[in-house]
Every structure is written in C-alpha cells, then in structure tokens.
Amino acid sequence: MIEMNKDKKYRQTLKYKLTQKRYAQSSKGKKNHAVAQRGQRQRRRKEALQALGGECVNCHIDDVRCLQFDHINGDGYKDVSYKVPLTKYIWIRDNSEEAKKKYQILCANCNWKKRYDNNEVGRKYD
Image 1 (cartoon, helix red, strand yellow):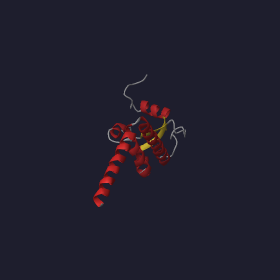
Image 2: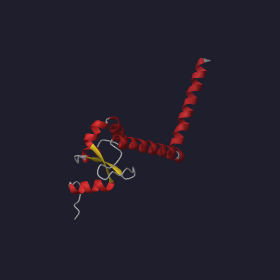
Image 3: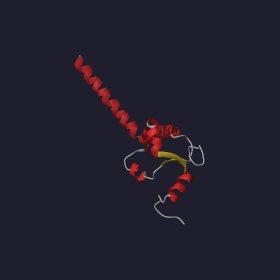
Image 4: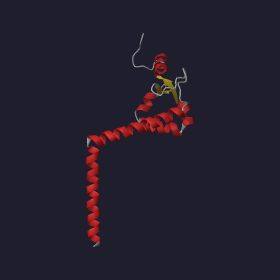
C-alpha cells in the first residue's frame, strides 16, 4: 500500500512539473513572467534612486523616467561587464553610503553634458 502511494505521488509530481513547464513555455506564461520581472525591476530601481537622493544632483529634476545612474569617476565601463542592473540596484539600496561615493544621479541631459565635458563619449561632437 505504501509503495502505491509513493508511485501515485511521484506521478502527480511529474504531471505537475510538466503542466508548469508547458505553461512557462506558452505565450501567456512568458508574458506574465515578463510583466512580473518588469515590475520587480522598476521597484528595485526606485529604491536605488531613493537611496542616492532621488533627484538630479545638478538641476534637481525628480522625474524617475529621465533619471540615470552615473559613475562619478567616469569608470562605468568597468561595471557594465559583470553587474546585471537588478543586482546593481539591490547593491546600491543595501550599501547606500558606499554607493554615494561611486554613483550619482543625473538626468539624461546632465549626464550627456558631463560625458561630453569629460570626453567620456565614444565620438567627439563639435
């Protein structure tokens, strides 16, 4: 009797896993996953922005749609190769004092002006 229950439970587990796999591979499952990931990414980004002050350090714009994380020393190329944005947001949120020494928040316009002035862009504009 015990052997039959184990076998039945095993088959139910396999059936459940197969159902979950089919759902995850379906367009509805992929869409729901993408929506959940987007929401999590936006939430973590807002938390990280708040940890660094929540506004542009130059012009004090606080619209999250145009705020960007800027490397104070211009060494962002070192960071891009190994940090996924979501983990970067979590790190900034959890280590805000250390992050304030490395990152600042700039709006898109101020960030591009800084990049141009410090010759951090790939091509030179006249």
